[in-house]
Amino acid sequence: MGSTVSFLLLLFLSTINHISSESIIKLPSDNDISGGNRKVRADDNVVCDSWRLAAETNNAGAWNGVPARCVKFVAEYLTGERYRSDSEVIGKLASEFAKRVRLEGEGRDAWVFDIDETLLSNLPYYQDNGFGSVTFNETSFDDWVNVAEAPALAASLSLYKELQELGFKIFLLTGRSEHQRNATEANLLFAGYSNWERLILRGSSDQGKSATLYKSEKRAELVEEGYTIHGSSGDQWSDLWGYAVASRSFKLPNPMYYIP
Ligand SMILES: [Mg+2]
View 1 (tube, rainbow, N blue to C red):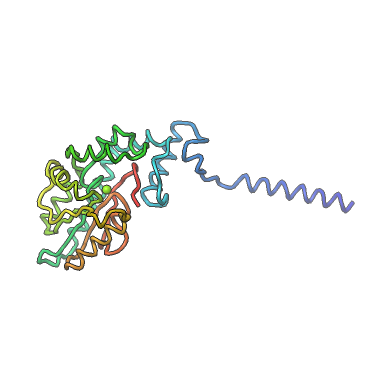
View 2 (cartoon, rainbow, N blue to C red):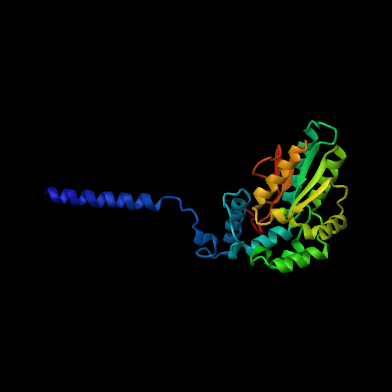
């Protein structure tokens, strides 16, 4: 009799355990994100939008390449209304902040811009190169840089001009190398940018450093020179964090690649 009760109790408990484990909300696994279990197209849009948010907020940490199932989503995001709209909203928030800044005057009020995917859009290049889904090819990208015809990101161009009118000194801090100075200047002018205070590129002693370290060092030099860095705009977290950071940082979208 006692053993029958024990058996029934065990059966009851195992059923409860089964029910409770089934009712746990299931989060998507890596396999789901990278192209495995869910196959419906509409599902891709939901999952890939969540992936994009995780990448932009840096919850994804260092990521390498757009997940295969999200390439179409990323292409549509970048070439459709959303990318432009997201950039415009961020530009507007940056502008509202800039107008509230109490400038110190004497030409010491600085704003730091990154270049690629911040001031200039390399979308024409990435459109021909898989929107971040294929391994980065330095040679073909350098060829593209030398053409010097990347268009401006419209929202950044309008913020840039507004900051100059407000009295900010504009510093351009890019991961591009010194040997690309001429092409970079030519491209910036082509895209409508002018009168920047300084264009800072990676010199020989900067090669091999992470973007976070290199950019922090360069910002620290500006601070040592007496500049106050009120704002900073970039499409990578490595443009914005580290040390000697701006009072406010504005992260532009970039679901194509991650630079540490
Ligand atoms: Mg960039």
